[in-house]
Length: 314
Image (cartoon, rainbow, N blue to C red; front, side, top):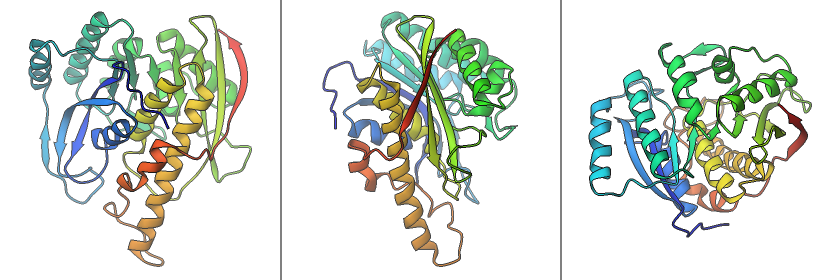
C-alpha cells in the first residue's frame, strides 16, 4: 500500500460521468482517491448510465463549456496539476480544447505527466468519428507521457499492422518517437503461449531519455463477459502505479493488471449469482464492483507476472 502524501499528487481527469455505474470518471476517481491522489474531475458528458444499457439519457459538455470550467480554475490560480488523465471523447473541437488546456498546464508545470487513453475503437472497427484520428495522432499523442492504446488503436496511430510480437514492439517504438515515454498495449490479438484462454498485453518504457527501452509482456486470463469501464480503470491504475514505480514498468503493470483481475473476478462472480444459472448477466449486473474492491485496489495480490523481454534500441 502507498499513500503519496506529497503535494505532487493532484490529477485533472477529463472523462465521462454516469449517474449510475462505473465508466470514465466514475471508474477512475475512487481508485485514485483510495491510493491517496487528489482528483479534480471535469465531466465531458453526464449520462444516466453507460450506453450499453437499453436506454440512456443525458447531456454532453461542449468545448466552450469545458473552457469556461477551466477559466474558473485558472482565475483562482489553482490550475497546478501533476497528472492529467483523459479517455473517451467523440468531438474534435472538445479534444482540441483539451489539447490547449494540457499545453498550458505543461507550461505551468514542466514535470506534469499526461496519461492518455486514445479511445477510438477495437477489433478492427472505429467507434468514434474518423476525424478524431488525425487530432489524436498529430496533437494529442505528442503531448502524452503515458499512452494506453489497444492493438487496433496503436495500428491506427502508426499506420502499421501488428501480426507478430516483433511488429508490436516496432509499433511501440514508433509511438515512442511520436512522444510518449511509456506505452502499454492493453490488449492484442497475438496468440498467448499459455493458450487461447489468455490475451497478450505488452509494454515499453524508454530508459532515461535514451535510445533504449525496456519491453515487457503479460498473459492475462480472459473473462467471458463484456465489461464497461475497465479501460478507464486500467489507465487510472497505471497512472497510480507508475507514480509509485516510475522506473519499473514491470512492477507498475503487474499491480495494474492484478487490480483489474480482482475487480473483474469479483464483478463476474456477483453478476452470475444475480443472473442465476444459465442466464447471461445484464449490463446493470455487470457494473464493476468498485467499492467492494477497495482493499484490492490499495494492495493488490499479484496474480499476473510480467516478463521482461529485452532492452531494444530504437
